[in-house]
Length: 236
Image (cartoon, rainbow, N blue to C red; front, side, top):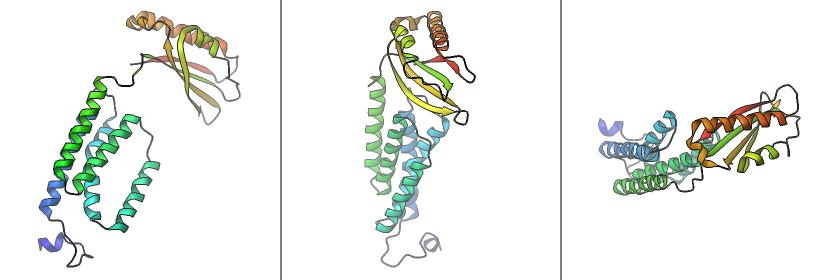
């Protein structure tokens, strides 16, 4: 009876069937790998609870998919197409989150092929590298500000805010321009590095600088309805 339940209705005598014990072992190891990757990847990182749950479950999902493909080329192509659809229907994440998802998928793929020891070793090496790079602050720059400016969509903002930003920032960059309020407004996002980063140690001085930037930027915007300057937020 058990053999009948765990056999596919399209299986033949030549089809290799995965035993329930092997299935449970692979899925269990994949779940443990997912928990381990979740803990190591989110170390000293801020992320949502939904991402943590996804990262913990993803190796097991990929493992099961690979076990079910089991050498079938046609099924493998269909699975690859399904994974590509997930990419386009998902909200874009940070580079760190995307890398973590790829690591989890790789560990699940290795486990699904039956190499449980290599899957654990792969997760330990990549998770350890993630923690080491995070501790070393690899690629991080000086702490700065993120400034959001909302303006009417018909305002020509080229060259309007640069004099104000030159006054306060050692360097700055326009990172994002997006529409809001059904396309009637533009939201500009700037990354700033102040000329005196040491003032970040004093919360009162930081608040004074932030208020001065917001006031100067607001005064440089022509009088019209719809525009606003959001108070810059500290990015740690």
